[in-house]
Picture 1: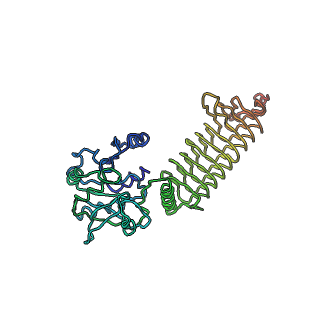
Picture 2: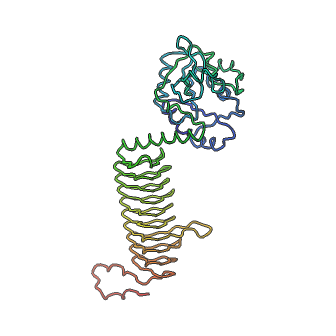
Picture 3: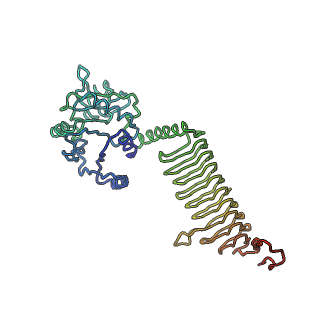
Length: 415
């Protein structure tokens, strides 16, 4: 949620971004550190004005100060720019964004007889008459002249029902204030509970899917498709219903994904298909022209161009070459109880149904396994292994050197 707000703020052109955080929210602070933003801590929860006072006055004075609520993920950079431009054009000490919404119950905007801003009354302090008759609400986007803001903050008192220092009380001391009324109540939604979180998530999802569709991606059923904002999908790819795409997943062009597919932090090449009921976990890389069939699961696995993993298989920590085929029910047993080990399957290999490959193990180029084999030792290029445990029953002779005739070398070894 915070990332959406930060992207809108930076997208509007704002610089030197600071985020005020409760010191008990360690995960939020750690996430900000990952983004290169040093969090500013509010040690005591004494209100929004007190939060802003955690920024040293010298960093505010003489500057244009933009303040945005951190629980407003639906805000866009365009809306913030609109507020900034209005503030610069009006040259007033402060600018505030508002919205008309009869279903809202936050800070009410009380206007004077001439239409100017008189004050903002928070929900706990609103009278019954205000609740019935005032439907213009504070959005939580403000722009201030920094020096006048710091002066106004010195006059804020906590004489209200919440016993907090409200940032909105600065408007009692910053006259005149420019008001920018927004058209879309949804954009002004503050996420204050799990109900609003679900509503905001649905709106964000629709924005993401609309953006994909406008870029040339077919979403068969937007209502049953979930795609995170960090996902990239190529043109002319089709996303079937009940597909979930998460984290930094990248899907190429002309692919078909789904239905009932879950992909997280994986890469899929052009013209590949995946599903139904497939799970691709982090670290998986699928090349071009690959088929991943029903009920397959792959993790930390690379699949080469033109290969097929058709049905009911698990490939963990596997390097699969090009033009290889994985039979139904194949398992790469990658965990020995202590460590994860890799399996390597060469180009053109054909793995029989119900094969278990006990890592670390390697199947050579063009090798084959019989149905139901348990492979515990490497299989050479071109060889066939069968049984439990599998043993090599046939070795393919290497190609004859130029000029050599058949019969000039030993017969093919048989085991």
